[in-house]
Image: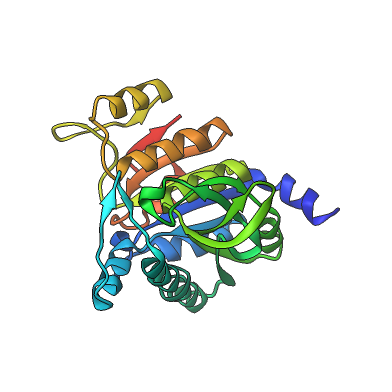
Length: 268
């Protein structure tokens, strides 16, 4: 059986988990959960953010932090910091921690192997990309070898019919959704710093349909950083993924999500 056939036959075991800096800490169990999922013969892929650390390093270099439409405006100098922090510092620290837990992990950005291809989203945002394609072959190859891919949200610009040498900053939530959709992952889990999708004063939605989610976004009920998470879930759900947005600060939130024991918001 070829590696491609093996990968296709194992899509029902793929778990794409997205973690952000706000949910990683000394007491966090997300990485231990990732290792446990692999021990249970599932195939986890980890997508990470790190926006707070990027802002910290931009400040160290006296570079401004500015957001429009919830996305970081990324000029040429800012892009250098974004790539260095996300694809370097954050990515390799996660790989090191997974390795210390006994896992085999390889860190890469979406630019490596052309995993993530993107177009420039809006000239006003600078080097910020909108994903147009995913090359799943390198990920299936790693998974077939029992390796956990750890992916930083950086992409290569796709111009016409070819890849350019330009790197683009990608929203990590959007990257996770695109990967889950392309891989036809069984699960897409967002580990956040809130209990789920808030739809009213103190009210968290247990589940949302595509129609409900769209209406809440249009009405401004779902706003800010939750919008790309919900949209990513809707995209992946179209490909058959079970999508959850849960509080990653709770102990073993990822593992409990897969076991169906975690409260949060399910989007179908």
